[in-house]
Length: 188
Figure 1 (tube, rainbow, N blue to C red):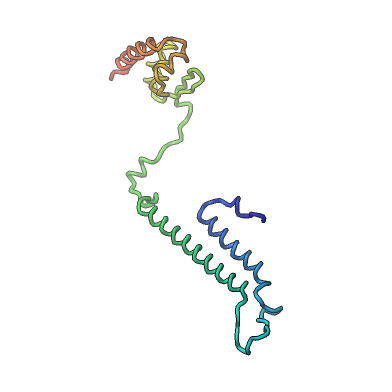
Figure 2 (figure 1 turned 45 degrees about the vertical axis):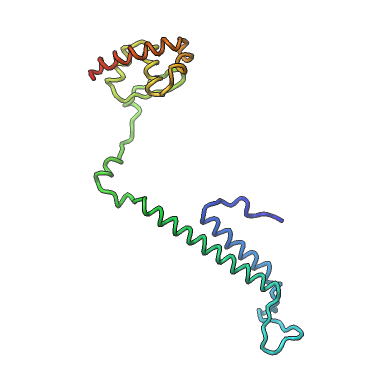
């Protein structure tokens, strides 16, 4: 049997579409078995009285399946509406936010020319603060590399040491002294 439903997205809308499509497809398959004539009227069978309408076993199965599918679709719809209600209780739209919060969300397009770029051991570290960049440039390459790798990339001393080819204890010692020097240069 060809499984057409395996590649369908698992989102709610896709599930509902898949069930509806499946119901329509089953309806097309079962329609010739439902006992209807060429023009859609019921055909008479032996043993039926003049006004009796008897459902064939295939029609009964079809109706049961359609009822099941309607329940599934209704359940999925209710789940979807419940999810919307749950989300609406803790989400708010931008139009509902006060202007003070909207102003904090606003950000200008950052121009890369505003940053000073440090390239250290294959890592690109942008520094926006000019005072900080100038203070770091007063140190040597190894010294500002230690500070930037530790504080910007949050690498540990034992991870910085092999990158710079020095011992872990030297990284720790230099990092502490350089940080104190940097604080005094920045005036904080």
